[in-house]
Image (tube, rainbow over all chains, first blue to last red; front, side):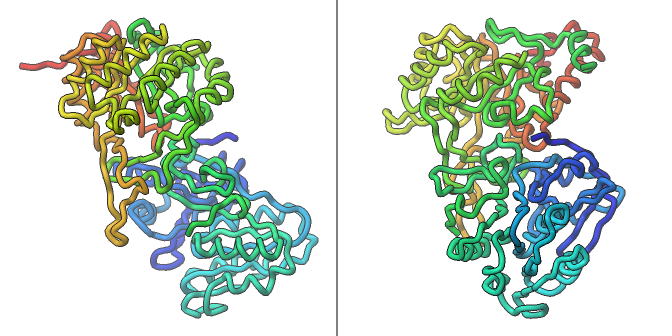
Length: 261
Length: 312
């Protein structure tokens, strides 16, 4: 596994909602070697506060060497990131971590909650390259409100994936949690990929376990380096001890995770 | 490789006791893994030395998460000294390190004086280790959990035990969480240390006001990064006045200017720590910057910078 550090010019900035943004940068070496589920460590600005890089899932890759990141403003780092504009550079290191293992047989579905949708779009892109003979059930996407979902759902559609949506406020699709849509499709799949808040992933993992469906989860934690050096990004593993999100993951088989949240 | 040739033209050589280094830029323990983690981002052969993640006799799982949190210009960590243990280190990590041209310094830690002694003996017998750095910030389990590094007698006892167990150069890494760091520095010098390195992290804390919970599961943790640099520089200067063995400066060093401050204050070498996380190329940038500083000031070498603080 090899990482690259790139000073990448921002080539596009999209404002999806008041606090959800998508930045697209030109980072050809990362674009050429990244796999779905991998991430990049972004230094939002070259100052000492905020100090640390932030991990972001790779959301989308284009053939022209561009890489997109989808994020919501939740703190100091994402606030700075949201203030950047095309023409400016960001310093990023990637691709990092172990991504999704793509299933080449049997049907699958993806379940994304909030910003957890980000890596699933890249996964959807990459899955087009493997066996598509199966009649896959819909992708399940959930968010707080329709504004966060409309454009993303349409983009999955454009790739050829049907989408079922759920919103907390009922403004789009199912009024409730996206996990509630899983019961309709779980008997039709052999593989589920999920990324979202921990409580949501725990529910999905448990349902998959009961149904005997393989489940890959993409975890998110604070991390300082992304390289396996700081050892800050641990979570308790079922096998005992801890695993590191940056190197052992961020994608894990659901059984590896000792679900505590 | 052009940069390597340029290094050779500018004299950046320093010595830590019997250990000769091509340049004074080292990586701090716990911030550089076992070096291989950085191989695709950093030219490891250019580093003055690599200090690997602290090693104990037995493997340690470390503390529960969350283990790290960012603070203003710094970070707090309570990793809990997670490491593979000395035997797996020798089997799995050392072979890669032995193939590097860079001196490898192994940081050791223990719960008792005997632990340190056994570690030093075991590592001293292994090929490819240039020196030991002794982390004395750990609690002494047999003495009620008081950190070795906060008591001059215990610090000296650990130093003496390591000194007797190995012929490798012994660097003792000092804790800043003491009233007078020079007392500890002199105690470990008298006990046979070849050098001291400082500072380890400053004990700190952060709270999430919404949940009113500490941001670290361990409640308290070690503060590192640029936030601690002035404190580190002050302590390095004080210790450099107090001892006659080499001092290695650590604490928030990110830039060439940071490194020069420590050298001027009396450090013979410096370690880059937290910067490896946010700016993995910091070490190489500092090596280039020091070489440029030596050339621009028509100096013989970097030694001409060391301990040159001008006091009127």
